[in-house]
Image (cartoon, rainbow, N blue to C red):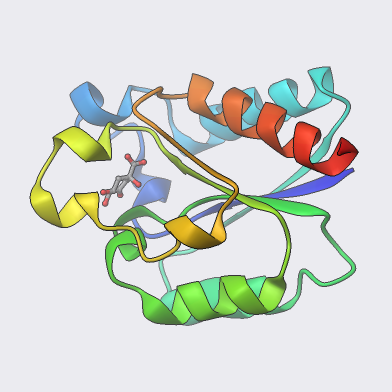
Length: 144
Ligand code: DQA
């Protein structure tokens, strides 16, 4: 099974962001770890990151027939980007929302997610390991 791993705005800056919230791995290191988690679960992972909302939306448009599921961390877009929500609905694939930090215990504006109800699960505050949890959830979803 093919899982598209999508990172949004500012996640290319991992390694320079507050390690207390986001850890110290760079995005390349994070993606390598996610690839290993996927491999161990028998899942093929492919990676995408952009800082441009329209590109994120257009990438979601391309996934039909290309991916079986999506793991996405849209960064701050999570909290207000209704166009990404609409595009995720169009993609119509099982999706898991991931956040490295514990968004529920941070600022109030981070506690809103416009994609949450389209996702089969939300994983937050577990750092890198959260992506393993997300992929396990995807595997369960795809084998159900
Ligand atoms: C984030 C949480 C968001 O609130 C923030 O804007 C990010 C990263 C996370 O992974 O914890 O950029 O999605």
